[in-house]
Length: 276
Image (cartoon, rainbow, N blue to C red; front, top):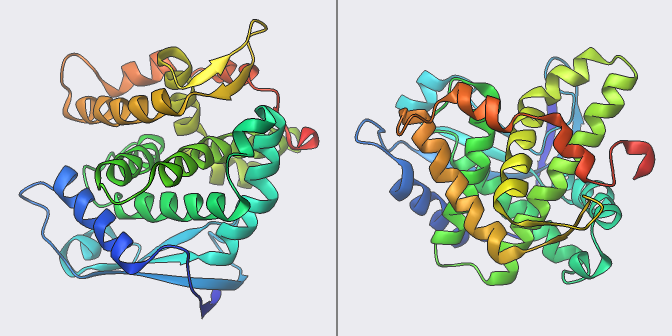
């Protein structure tokens, strides 16, 4: 059960339309029927029942692929959850991990906008090139969404960098929540986080191995190279697509073998919520 009220967003309709158009251009296949789709911004006042926790920033309606593919769907983004999550979770986590100059490049509202754009693009990319593997499906939606934002040609460099930084922040905060859930044997929260957490682990390993996150002589990530982060986010989106297609001996099991190593989180200074 969810109680929602209509709200405004920092993302304009023409920006949403451009992300949707670019996503379809990049990833729609001949079998993907163009169906009615809408996106609404709502303030979430109350959530209860199955699937209400951990709290989410967006929801797809209806929750059945066959209906969405044939008849259309609606994405609902929870503006207050996006804003609160950015201000009270992502930004404090980023300040603990990176040098102040990285975070201070952006105002709080720029980072809230970055999160909003990122969530819009994520939801718009679920219908295309689906993985039946949940962690890779969530990761695919994220990196394909980032690629769509970059290649749409509509967004300024500061918008793109805010999207990239909040993606890292969300991954770090997800790690802290997973550690906390494990410490308290909270299996429900662990199950709710699992799909995102494995995808984040894979992505962080890829970025540290290929570039985008700068490591000091103590093996700690201290800085972001936005140029490399942008380039390697696109390359990773392409890498995932090759795995989905089974190209060039890149397989789903190989992705897990090469990049699903939780030791990657040892490179970051924040490992659990008590340190945030």
